[in-house]
Image (cartoon, rainbow, N blue to C red):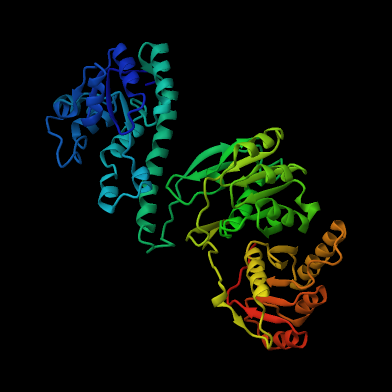
Length: 529
């Protein structure tokens, strides 16, 4: 069977947008409307004749609406193969009428979770009858059309109008595919909630991660790759994927990746102190905290003015006009901030290619979560690195105690190093990065690169000395030998923060003492790959 004449439709929806117009269109084609509870009321309020589901089944709705459509006269009407003689005979014997069209959308489970409802309310918003009808209709798409998304009402009405009230097999196939995707996503959201609601199963036997397509991207990491952005169906922490884009062309795959790295790092800093992060190729090339947002930007920019060109800027406070003017002095791809004042927006409006992303706020950097990486034949999943260190967690392992300023610079450098690709070395002084060494295969090379970049920055700025002089240096993992530490000493560092844990810790500590360094251990590593 190809084209099917729609004579009876069953409607049961939670989202009633577009329902009245759809009902009117179906009525124009002489379709009998059968409905349940609130949907029937909404249709009647629109002046439409509606047959209650209880009249069809001969059985009342019961148990607070939990049992309405779970009945043979409903599912028989949906599942019967119309050209199968045995099915037709069964329908006649049991007075089962065919249902040609089903309009169903499901209880708002995700929205109920998102508004912080209690467990009983969430459980009540697990739809049973709806998915059952959807699956029955979708299975029998050779004879039944199933619509689960109000966005498809218009196409349905156009199809009916164009064919005298008929649906084509091709149309029903497409609707069935969408319907099965909808029920699979719905069930995966429920399974995900049960797995994580009590934080009891971080790694369940089967992991459900319901995602929704948000947008196509121009291309992937490279032009020959294709890419898209998906966002979680379930509520979660806000991030770059949820940010509001005020201007500029759409973000690319690389823009999203870099913007995420910048946002994750800037969120580590308390909003009480203005902070700026500049990222290039997912690595911070400059980070600073200061008395004003503009000063923080200028200090971060000074760390590596070459790499900052075409970079991503993230701010932990609303963007103001003064900072906006400073940012527009060079080419910047994306700026991320919680908000922006009108003057700042006007300044950016003149830069059509500059993307401004407003987050409205930041997610808690200490929040739990999962990080997922695909590998050939499988997926690696780990808890996100939400480790945090305070001054009280530090163990001083050298003869010399760090000063208060050195401690502050150590903690600042450590925060940045957590977000630098391993092997990571970060020099910092007075709340600003002096040099960042990222992604080298040995730690000593990262230390050398960071020191070289700091010297280069000093020459460009016309400073009398490199900012590594008198700096604190952070290493994301322990120094396996003293040579990496001595590279930092040669650069002028006076304080060191590192996890410790090497079998040669004693040698490294002895070298630090001989050089007059203050060194603290965190007991926590921050590899990042």
